[in-house]
Image (cartoon, rainbow, N blue to C red; front, side, top):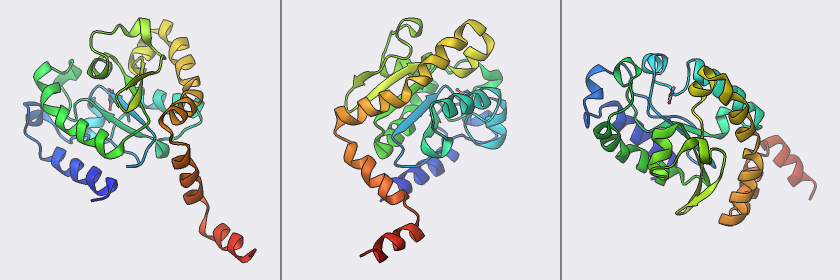
Length: 215
Ligand code: URA
């Protein structure tokens, strides 16, 4: 199965998942979205009201802010995979419970394995704690560190930065560092060849024909 097929299959499984009680109150599950070969994966907390309605991640106010932050880093949603540690909305936007995080982890792990991103950006403490247990976000935000086969960058949750104005400069500065951190991660993982291949694939068919006709 291709990575794309695996990602679609996980989304199907998530839509009928009953591994925890969150399925009882969900309207739509939110498996996450983005290319199956994304180099960067953003992992938030869980769906809120709007995400539960639409079945898509980060479509409310925090999502609009995330779009701005991505634009500032020179990337769009089409370039990255965006998911969450829990795929169904905790009622009233409460924090996800340990048993919900544990039950949903099988889906997130399967997504990470299929996508194999160079960088995982964690948004908020629940996502950060999966990779860096016990860490303090205020101490380590924006700092990239190697975790196994990839790099993890903990960042503040965009919703937190929206509600606490004091966090906004920090999250802006952290996102601004992302392009250079991606270069660093690629070099350390020996993935520069992957980038060249992607660039080649991105050449439009007409342009490819033109290139061929030069010979
Ligand atoms: N907050 C999250 O953590 N995830 C979403 O998908 C939306 C808001």
